[in-house]
Every structure is written in C-alpha cells, then in structure tokens.
Image 1 (cartoon, one colour):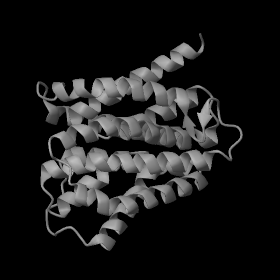
Image 2: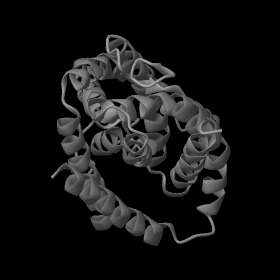
Image 3: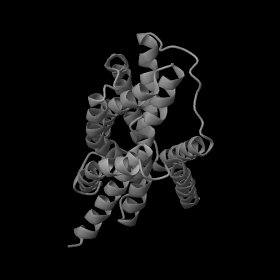
Length: 267
C-alpha cells in the first residue's frame, strides 16, 4: 500500500504532461525532469543520482509519447522523412555520447545545465524568439553534425530535442508544419538512443532504487507513459478552446519558478 501514493504521483505527472504537450506543444521532458527530481528526492533516492534517474526516466517516457505524436503528424503528411533519414544517425550517435557524458557528470552539474535550459525555454516563450529563415538545409555532413549536437544536449536535459530541432529547421527554411511534424518524428530516435545510453551506463551503479533498469526507474516510467498517452489528445482538443498564447506565458513563468527553486535548493 505504501507504493500506491507514489504510483498516483507518477500517473498525475503523466496526465499533466500529456495535457501540456497537447495544449502548448511543449516537450514532455521540460515538465517531467524537474517533477521527477522533486519526487525522487522526497522518496530518498541517492542524491548523487537523482538527476541522472530523472533524465533517464524522462527519455524512456518520450519513447511512448513520441510514437503517438509521430503517427498523428505522419497521417497529416507533415513529416519530411528525407530529413529524418539524413539526420537520425547523427542524432543517435550524439544522444548516446550525451548519455555517456551525463553519466560521468555530477548531479549538481546536470541540474545547473537543466536550470539554464529552463530559463532559456522560458525566455523563448515570453519573448516569442524565433530564428529567421536565412539559409537552406546543409548537406548530409552538416545535418549529421547538427543532429549530433541536438542529441548531446537532449541527453543533458532529458528532452525529445524539439527545443533545438524546431529552431534549426526553421532557420534552414523548412515549412512550419513540416518542421513540427519532422521534429516530432525525431523525438523517437533521440528517446531510443537516450534510453539505451542511460540504461547501459546505469547498470554499473549498485545502489539505485528498485525496480530500475540502469538509470530508468520503472514505476515512474509506467505511470507517466500510460497517463500521458491518454491525455495528450485531450490537450490537443483544449488548444482550440483556450487562449494558448497567454497559457504559454504562464507556463514560462512556471518554468522560471521551477528553475529558481532548483537553483535555491542547490545553494
């Protein structure tokens, strides 16, 4: 019975994440990572691995949510599979490298990187910052390099990469509906490589809470994945009835508050 409140917290987190993703188009990791950091810390998880487990579990949950998102965008013809094929090898190699690097970093350093990321996303939302379409997509070597950079950073903050892949493709003059759909498709290889990387690098750690596979905490993964898959379509429907622009600004302020709370907790 002691496990029940913990499971409910993960189901509620997944439900909220799904609604926000569908409503505001924000990546689930932006919400999941800080929430899991607080929940894991409250349950007495090893302090030195709390951030690693939050990142890994977020990545693993994106595996499930990205599939439904990918299918929806593909059905609308919004995925440029030529871009996906060319950039995916770089993304997967970069994400695997990023997961390995993250496993070598302290939880404190990873928290600092996430806090900076939260402030960046908040500023992007509040100021409506968007890159100007000023060039064309690079050739395959350039795309592989861009994919590698996106993958490395995605591992550091536990996201599906949309925060970086959307501005990159927009900068490269890709049509907006194609940018969003293609970014959703790229979330799957990022999540797959990130999950593999965090699982493999976490297997050598002996004192992780059970049941875990590497750095991935299974009860949190199950609760988040199950709930978010069901609530994401609800959030998408709500987007047509609610003032999304104002809600994005409120979400940005929430991100600033979360980042600040994490920062204060480190001091």
